[in-house]
Image 1 (cartoon, rainbow, N blue to C red):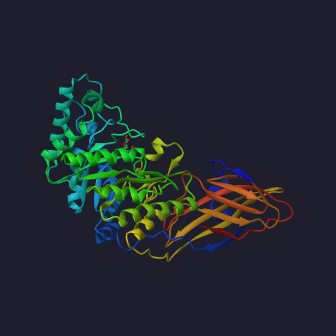
Image 2: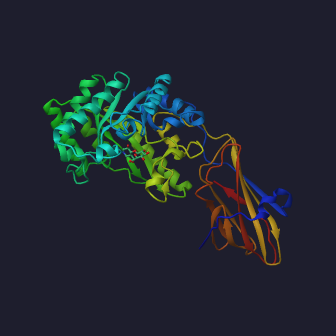
Image 3: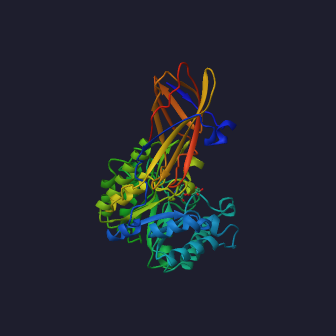
Length: 453
Ligand code: 9MR
């Protein structure tokens, strides 16, 4: 098996169909890729669940805004309410993006999850680099919480008050807050938040707490003791930044044990990352994983809903932080719903419209000489779309691929299989993608039948 790939496109391919010396085509239906008839938010509402997304305020126009408004009934500002955003220099506030997102949510009849008041990350430099006595630190935190919660009083349905307080082994994370104020900073923060807004549900939010493990058990014990002490704690956020194929087996059981403590459970930052490029098999697995997460939340009445951490791959933090990984959200970079989108809809009781259109692959030889040839394959979709593709064929006369571009091609014996590159997996409804290759031949060079999926 050889893997062939190069990133350039020879000029011979740019001359178009007029130069084709041979042409073959096979029409093959592509997998479902049309939006379900019923928006996710309507499906979720019928089940009494939230379906949310993190958003970036500056993007809330055009297609991004249309989808955010139409499909989701909750929004979380991805960064707009973090301390470094709202108070970049001491006493100077910038509420522009946070205000914009809250206004967008109100205009679209959506709830907002405030995110986040107390964290070890994305704090302003003046705060991180200052030298503070415990009393000063306590005053700073109380002022921050009071100012921000009061500003949005009555308009936010929930707040992630404390974010990521634990280490993986269940001990408290060493942070500005823990080191300066001790573990009780958590109880104090919740109490100050409740004083500023009596109606917002107050959450502690963390990652790697989706299954039953040391970290989630520490969170469980904390919530239990806060409840026993009468500290205002209404909910637990399980972030759920998951890896393909790794939804914890104890996910539902873990949600249930928190719910049994009498707090709401929200899946607050769901994404499921995969190694790029995406493939049909990976996207299918991802859909199963999304469905497992949604199913678990639907199965537990105390699970208030699921928020995805960005609804499109073009607005996901994953590629910036996990090199070579991505495709973690339900829509691809061009807003084409992926199998994961349909899985969410299905888990929420929706039905997916079967595709009425098809994607076709057209194989052509664009030039040929005594021992070699250049070929191209054009994938075009009409009434359907693809978010990853594989084109396969069998060479009938001993031809061999020697080089490919805009695809990764492998050949085993006569069997050739070409998958999309990281940048051209999307074939939108009404659009096309072309890749090319050089090959060797002798005797004859017949056009094979190709399939696409
Ligand atoms: O999505 C956020 C990204 O844009 C920021 O660069 C990043 C900085 O840490 O924070 C991301 O959101 C985080 C969230 O606030 C808390 N849980 C983990 C998320 C991913 O890092």
